[in-house]
Image (tube, rainbow, N blue to C red; front, top):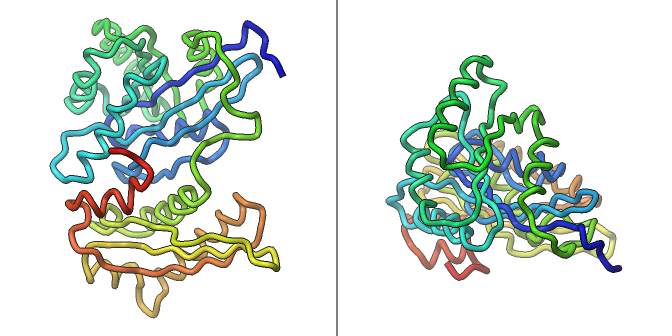
Length: 302
């Protein structure tokens, strides 16, 4: 089907320091859950595509890991994944947290994009957490930087300002084709999405050092003759003590992770799921580039 000449399409990268709500924004704009979310910083480890279908336009959003000063090999590769999007998009959406204001970590993010030519829109997220005078003061402060083409306040969690943001983004997109069919909201593989669902449950159910030490690898995923989808997945962690926490007393933690993850996987695929989880220890995997490529970036050239 031929597209009208007025059809607009293009890529917009969602950029910001950890825990400013990038994945929540992506999910809300797409109106489906594509990216894992939690209140832990550095939840997102990969570039994740989300497609917004509009009348006369298509926005392809790229959710990215939080940009931060990194020491571990995993963190360095996460930041590299974010920076790699700068030259491939029509627009950069830079998020800051309204409640925390513009901080030194945000300044670090801006420095990484000093030489990028793509227009930048500042998205002030979490405006539901501050009074209006504080928001106006922050907007005035950010206007004085003259770094952004536009500044827009939103609350991704409350779905406030989403329609205005979509219209703003479309205004910066060139005329182009419909890159993705209307029933497609992400180019992520099914195994990747399932692995992220499982990892999200670990993030939300565990504490201390456990969440960040975890990687999930979906070993196999296939539909059985009875229509049940069988998923075998391995949760990797760095220490035996963390493995014990993930198993829990009498296996209760692993059972809870599996039950909640299975329900969401069933909802996503509209089918009954049999989920089998294994836990293995891989010491200090976050500092081993080979392990990081295997667990986190198996299909990436990072």
